[in-house]
Structure formats: structure tokens, C-alpha cells
Length: 79
Image 1: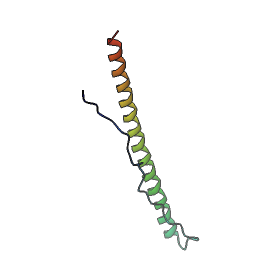
Image 2: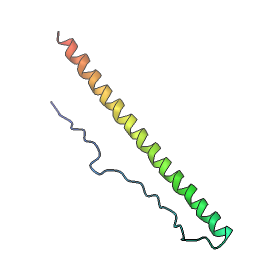
Image 3: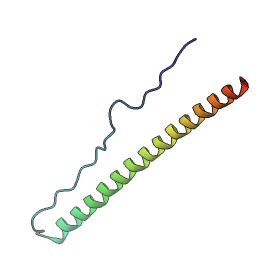
Image 4: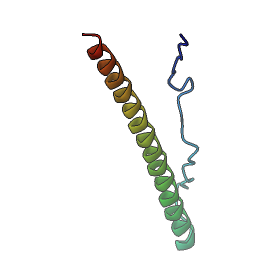
């Protein structure tokens, strides 16, 4: 009998998103606009990372549920 060990990720995932630099004071409207664009890019990056992690969570939960069901089906057939 072969036993396959499934392991969760060994390394905790982290995002590669960069916070925009906020100067103490904005010297122009253009500088403010660039900062606000950076804020939106940072937010999108974080949201995308969260979405990816939620998808991974769902896959792990489905794998867990499938393993439980497989065991229950097997154990039930032994009666």
C-alpha cells in the first residue's frame, strides 16, 4: 500500500505589492494624481492577491471534503 502525504504550503504566501510613496506635501496636482494612481494600483494588487488566496482556500476545502467523503464511503462499505 502506498501512502501519499499531502502537505499544505511550507512557505506562507505573501504579496509582492508596493505601497506608493507619499510625500509630506504634494508640490503639484500632477504629483497628487500620480500618487492616487499608485494607491489604486496598490489596492488592485492587494485585492488580486486576496482573490488568489481565497481560490486556494476553496481548492483545499474541496480536497479535504473529497478525502472525508472517500473515507466515509470506504468505512461504510465495511459494515
